[in-house]
Image (cartoon, rainbow, N blue to C red; front, side):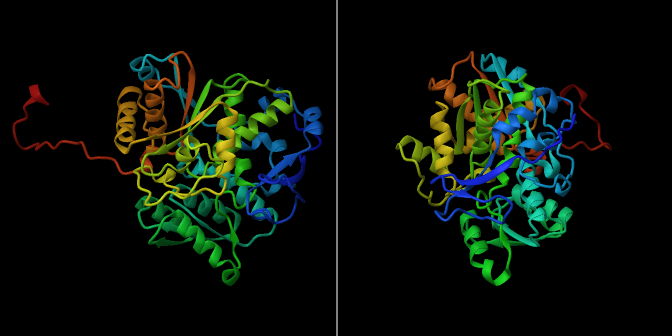
Length: 407
């Protein structure tokens, strides 16, 4: 059933200061230089939707339209944003003597990563607001998603990526028609180039959390997983954290669902997972800080979480602390072993960032931060096929005798 009213946005709000800003206009950061959050008329929404409202619709991101910021729903850009499955890692759980280890496999989305959620909304809103040209920095997957949705929207895209960005991502971005530049620096250096070129080029800065709408796309992970689990939350969520948009978005989703009467006050403990070679959130969490200083010389095989400084750092840390969660860092060796183990044991190929969540869970178990009887949900944020894999094949010469016994 489609409700007569589908647009419930009331205003935008600075995530740090709480100052209010008018909806329906082009916005970047707030005057305080912090992210703006979309707010809804939740009283009106509560009267308009039920669990059955959403259950009756096709299982896509767009089923949540009343909780999304488009004023004209026809402006949405659809590339097949299906609900991603929650898979039980049964053999992994048995190996770890755990009650339940689940993984939400975001690699099934368009462009092969969860970046499609945020960029679908960001580019749909750019289309609705009449933006003709966007620019953004990327470590890989976000740039691919932005380029794809920009192409579908007829919006020009310029993408800046660190030199060490995986080659497949660079070529993917270019394939969608965006101009992509390799930069001798990190993602925040790329972000500075986006900001520096804004006046000369006239592009809109689509950097993580520097516009209000990527969070709204990413929060659908929280909406979706709650419905998939029977309108409840897991005990613990392990989330690979770079810019942290998804963690912030899910925390926002849970609050909105409770305000609508669709779930109760229960919350999962939110765990921000980072690599030991780039762990600004972990350091800030351990030091009791609300803001995270830049991490110098970041290095990790998990390119998606190689973010030395995040503009939404306080929102990430607030959510982690409010939930009773924690921030934890893992080694690249542990990440690579986790990817290999899940592929062998459960037939699921995690990306390195997804591997980091399993490595973090194992570490958390060892040091007593999570118990064996808790239901944990890991996020695999992209298809493992988008990353280089070791060649473990062997060769056979069909013209020579084959030792079948030792094959």
